[in-house]
Image (tube, rainbow, N blue to C red; front, side):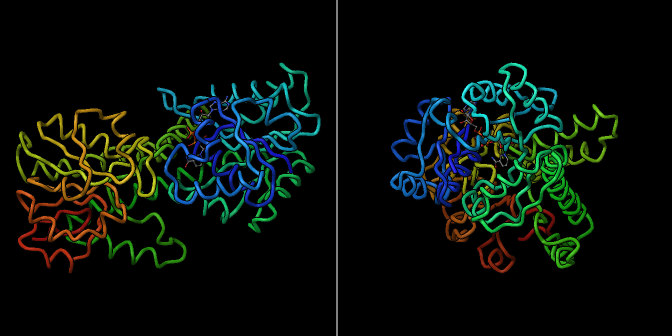
Length: 433
Ligand code: NAD
């Protein structure tokens, strides 16, 4: 099939590349000309494992093209997939400006038979609104399909090639069958629903996962007070098949471009529809609290943070991505600086993006060793493999004091107890000396 993908962000690019990989001819379009110029040379605009190789492979096979012209990709396409950003407005609701513009940019070139797919995460009813927009403004009949995306940054290629399920929301049987056909080579379970149910599945899934994280963090904070260990508790809970161990890792809260904004959008949708949003309000409040918890522990330990030098290990919102959107490291770094501390941060991939947000308010180290040097304490923020595998005992010898605040529970008791005179504070577990 001939496919156009609009938007070459994490979702659009991963989708376009994987659809080319399974045999379709794909043109990825973006208004960011610099991004397109890089992509035409085979350079991905962000760090995502495996994506660079797959781009080169499919460009060489003439299956994958990049353009900044909507006409180039949309004219003659069987399927047009929209994957532009749907960020949060100040009031928490979803901002559809990019989506509407992408529809307006693409609509003039839509063929009679082409199917218009919305992959971006959108409030319930948006697909219908976009369909009406195209029909009224361009006098074109269009088949619209809601096809929400569930990939995780850091494993976007794997997730796109091996989805747990593909959700196709449509009111037209031919259109949903055509989209199912497009995905057939992936051999994944396909769920066909109404458009509104498909739109809701995405928000309901993300809000559920965020709530699961906030729930285990709540249990973790309780564990600290009553002398239980949250990792044992999570294991005991997670072995119950009804619960599952996924998303039961206590820590300093969720971040990223999806969970925070999607929970807030669903909250706004609840309010608009007169449904009490209390459950989701607690999810958000718990997450905000959790992002401050390491600083509270440090304040309790040191009384004042003035003129203390702290190493921050990990800046991205999760490992294996350079994405800094809504990363817990941001409020944490800001809080430490406000309290008078000097912060020196290390991240394997996200420093260039972190500098755009935190600028020169903090310092940046080129290695873990450099960050540890003369530090009064170490804060572990993101569980990159390089960080969880570090020889912490040895590294602490160069620090001023061997104090660690671990926001991701990276180390087991044996490893910590083998370190000389360490003071180790983690989440939901007893302090180790
Ligand atoms: P992103 O911000 O990384 O990328 C969006 C891209 O769209 C940008 O490159 C931008 O230049 C481009 N764009 C904007 N307007 C355009 C237009 N008119 N024509 C062409 N290109 C245009 O976004 P993302 O993280 O890939 O997310 C896209 C959507 O997918 C969002 O709705 C998000 O909620 C959803 N989603 C994201 C993830 C994720 O992990 N990032 C996972 C599932 C779903």
